[in-house]
Length: 183
Image (cartoon, rainbow, N blue to C red; front, top):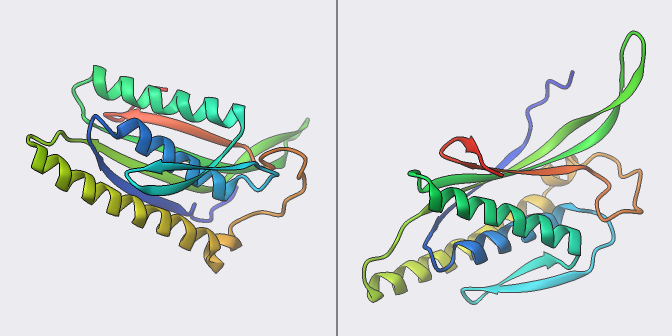
């Protein structure tokens, strides 16, 4: 069993109703853009005048939209206005049992997006809120780039043995609102 500590990168966001979907869409795409490792077609998203990288792939787009929508439904339909989107990236390893040999997914990195929904009261509050959120997005992109290009960020990546797909590593995206999985 792998007893190493799973590297976890945390991103904290405070969102409003108008920008929640766009921001989460952009942040998820940015994480996947820097961690898929296969041949990808890049694209960009403009969110609050911040350019964010993304992956132009129908399956990735469907997954991101599905998870962002699940987060939105969970926030809208529940009492909690806080949630998480957790991206876990793993590698497939052989698992040997007494009577069989199989594969298991062993996580090597996790990204946690903590999101809280707040609503500005006035137009002036909204302008200040959106300026602060744009600054947070810029810092988020900086965090993603700094971590993934650092020695520590590169060292956790297992050897790539299959470059024929968009991601040589399985990954899953889990959405939680109020500590309950919603999507």
